[in-house]
Image (cartoon, rainbow, N blue to C red):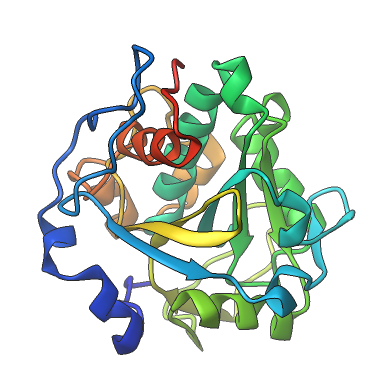
Length: 262
């Protein structure tokens, strides 16, 4: 499943510096009482784009079957990952890095109350609450109350991703692969772009990290998911990505207006 770029109109917001982003912590992520500075544009893209109310109110379903809406999280910094549980290339690395970021924030009890992490599927047909729940368990998600996995009606999920500029396309499955949870033979794959979106407390899109992160050493890919990886996915485990968990924490600290000490 090659990772594809977002649609051209939104891609203009990202610019070439995103491709040059390095690894390591950004200034302002931890320590001290000084207000964190904005992340440099060489690490991510800053913007101010309100999310339409009709999208914020769309009903989504979490891994327990409960109905959620993005509007439920007004007043919090929201970090949203586009992903799918049956991805074999980069989604497992995206998830591991998101989980590492959530753990760092969760260690700061003050910040943890004001931040929520969302993995919203690009594959709502197969990512049922049961599938999301199993994926969440693989990553030890039960210990992270501020990490939610969401699915929904395909039209609603796709409307949200269209606003954020996420490319997705259903394509034929090019090899014989079975669902790591059910053993069912997969009949299609989904190509999609790879981003992390940050909403501020006023539910405006303010920051984007684009591309695959560096696989975090402290949060290894779970055994069952690692076995599911394709050859390309296993190679990705050893590649330097374009962002890290520390850089994601720096973006969160900037939006909170205070350091995160996790």
